[in-house]
Length: 284
Image (tube, rainbow, N blue to C red; front, side):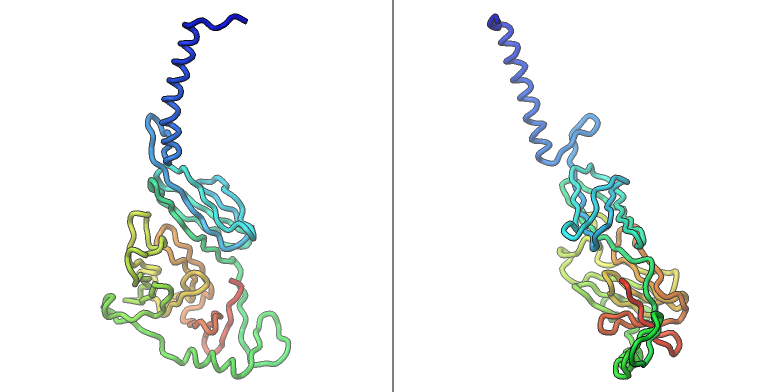
């Protein structure tokens, strides 16, 4: 084999140097979170999805990112160009959960999937010993009396006009408080604004201190944090479980569709009072 001529070696060297000078900046850009889009490089962000249950499928813009398991409950997708993405989590027997998330450059947008079963168990509570039918829950007289006392206590009522300084929260959890004002249900962040959770952020760079969970459509009568969301009752339609997140579109599902029904959280259980009867709603 003849040795390469000086001219050929020079051409190879020039091509190699040119390729090196071109690929190094590209590699640096990619390592820094930039991606080529059209005619230029753009910065990218990511989405971090937490899932509370196994066997749930996670999709971003219709593309499956994975299925949750006992050991895998979170999914991170990076290199996303800034924009709006549809995140969906589906699990058999549960309401589909869909969230429109805004991805911003060099920021990870995190979200917790709010999964609610399509079927819950509603049982009437009775004072009885021994086995009962599947539609009833047997309790002792003492336990039954705890339910009676829970509903006998007057719940906090907010003034028809007022703000954060005069209203009294109906429930508090981890820095967030629930308020009922003019029949509307509001959740407020009461700690340092710098520590506001992502559920209060319309997009990573734009967060709020409060937002409505129920506004205008019906008259809220009571609310409490429950099952990862907020359970509330309205005068017109009954009892609902709502997602506690400002980003569209919050999931709201009916739990007990009877106008005038009341509820309390008693020892971690959701207890409903409809007329003179008590019911236990479980299966969350």
